[in-house]
Length: 387
Image (cartoon, rainbow, N blue to C red):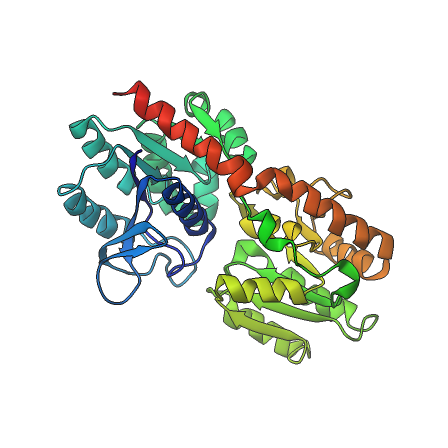
C-alpha cells in the first residue's frame, strides 16, 4: 500500500471546483482500496487543520485566502502564499508519491524539491495547458509571467497525467516534450449513483440548468439572452444558475432588464446532494463555457440522463466528451445555442435519444470500473520503478 499526497490549493467540498472534485473522488476511492491518502491544500474548514473524512486525511497547511481576484482571474499572490506554507508542511512529512495539480505552478516546484530530497516520485496532473497566447488572452501582459512558470513546470518531471484529450492535444502543439510523457486518465462519474434519475418524460423539460463559476469565459450571458428570446414561444421556460463569481451582478442586472426576474434563479454554490436534486428537476444542462479543462458536470448530467448542450470551442474539452447529435449537442455561437435549446424543447425523439445515449456514453467514465484502477496502476508502477 502507498502513502500518497495529493496537493492542490483548495480541497473539496469546502471549496467546489472541477479540480477539487476530481482530487476528492480519487482520494476517497484510493483510501477505500487501503492506501493512506492525504489531500493537502489551504484550510477552508473551521477547527483543526488536519481532519479525516471517509478515510482521507485532509491537511490545511495555512488559513485559506481567495484563489481568484475581483475580475474572476487567478490571484497573483495566492500561489506564493500557498507555496511557502506547503514548503513548511513538507519539511515535516514524507510520502511514497506526491501528485500535484499543475496550478498554481509554484506548489509544483516546492513538491519537486522534496521529491528530490527523499527520492519520491512526483506526478503532475495537468488540467489545462494554455501557452503564451492562452495566458495573454486570460491575463493580458501578466500572462507572460504565468506562461514562464507553465513552461518551467512542464520540465519538472517525466510523470505527467492529463485529465482530457484536449490537454494532450494542446500539449502536443505547445510543449511536445511534455506531451511525450503524458498519460491520459480522464475525470470520472459515479454511474451507479444516477440509476434512479428520472426518465426523460418525467422531467420538467423547460427548466434549464447551468452549473459553473460565473466568469466571462463561461458565457452564461448567452444563456440569459437565449431565455429572453425563447420565452415568447415557451411560456414556462426557466433558468437555474448554480455557481458564483465576478459576473453574477451583471447577469442579475441583465435578467432584470430583460424582464426575466421570475424566470432566472441564482442558486449560488451548492453541495453534491443539492446539485443532484437540481439535475433531477431540470430538463437539460446548458454548458456554454469557452474554456474548460474537462467539465465534470457534463458527464454527471449525461450519467443522470440529462441532455447536454455544450460549447464547441478550441479551449473546451466538451468537444472530446460529446458526439454532436448522438449523445449531446455542441454549439459555437449564441444563435446556435438558442436553436439547440429550441430543438430539445420541440423534438421529443431528439430529446429521448440524447438522454438515453448520454447515459451510455457516461459509462466509460465510471470511477470504480475504469478511472480509479487506471490511476492506482499508474501510481503503483511509478513507485515500483523508482524504488
